[in-house]
Image (tube, rainbow, N blue to C red):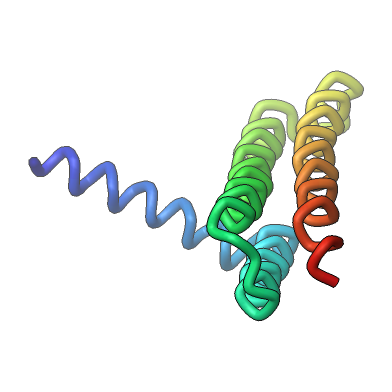
Length: 114
């Protein structure tokens, strides 16, 4: 049981670090909360809200993964390197794809309610 609590503590610490240090993560959190509030105000269905929440969680999780990859790249290759730059760009592209997908889901869910 100790291992479970230690793992949970490590995970929460990681989220705290990302929340305090990463501006894009903070922006995604604010936009996610605002989107949920708007969804509640527009009284979207439970199924629609589920899609919205899944999209938000995917974007936020993508940002966490991107941060971990970028930090690892900075340790492995602190000097400018084309391969490290490529890895960071690909990782950022992952976040962009998830954000664009979330935008499409948002349009599909919210547009009929407006």
